[in-house]
Length: 191
Image (cartoon, rainbow, N blue to C red; front, side):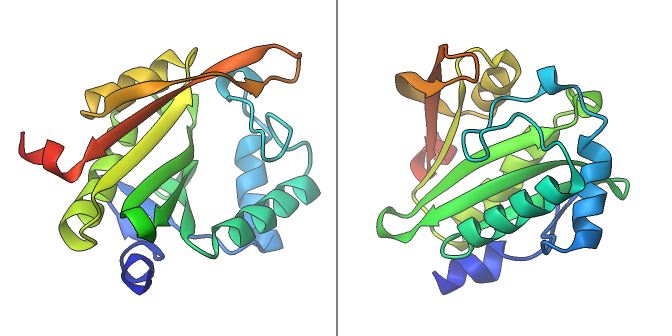
């Protein structure tokens, strides 16, 4: 686990982005809240961790940041994505040492920045560190079945659709949503 922390639990740079770890402070919550409060709820997928689509206040933003920070402590990291020093999203990952698997969890990028290849750029960096430095065997990703943008981004990155968790999430309106499960193995990179 130490190797994972050494490689991933720090600020990282990609070609165009900076992935920063933000402590759950009031100043950082203000930074996040100032971005999220202007977002269109339709651009977000439901977050079952918080039971909301978006936080509704600065206090709620800080509480969510604290919760996510604690949730990631044992084996994960939550990065906030910056482009030209502007916060445009976040990405959370976890490492399961017992089976050498990186689990890419929640990701969000501001709709204004969709279509720029930022998601693929982030995951290229994750793959490089996971497969080349950590010697991980597998990276997993997932998205809701109706999230066409995420589905396309993940498959363009060379991930294999492993299956579908049918009716995995219950949405706020009571409907059920399927979840698509993807993976890429270290050996897939050489194919």
